[in-house]
Image (cartoon, rainbow, N blue to C red; front, top):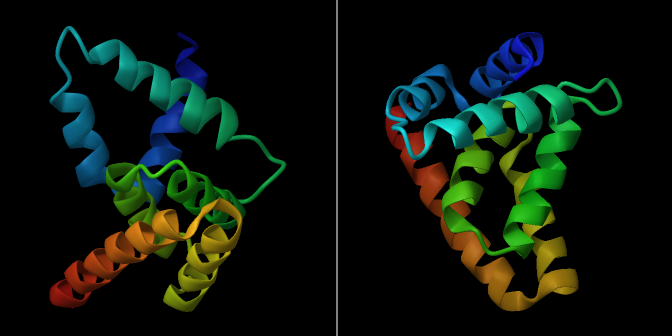
Length: 127
C-alpha cells in the first residue's frame, strides 16, 4: 500500500463522508474486512477521488447516478450525505434521481427517492 495515497484518500474520505463514519469503519474493521478498508481508502478515495480531473462535487453527482443505477441503497444513503457535504442541493439530487429513472429504470429511481427522503429527514432532525 502506498502510504501517501492512503493518507490522501483518508483525508478526502473523511471530508466527504464525515470523520465519525470513516473512523468507525476503519476502527471496526477486523481481520476479514481490514484489507477492504485499506483498498477503498487507498484506491477509491486516494487514487481516484484524489485525481485533479474532477472536483468533489462532480464526483458526487456521478456517484449518485451510478450507485442509484446499481440499486445499492446502503451506499446511496452514505453518498447522499456526502453529496450534501460537497454542496449539492436537494433539488440537484432530485434531478439526478429523475435522470436515473429515465435511463436506468423507474424502480431504481423510486428506491433512490425513498433513500434520499430518509436521509433528508435524518438531516432535518439534526438541525
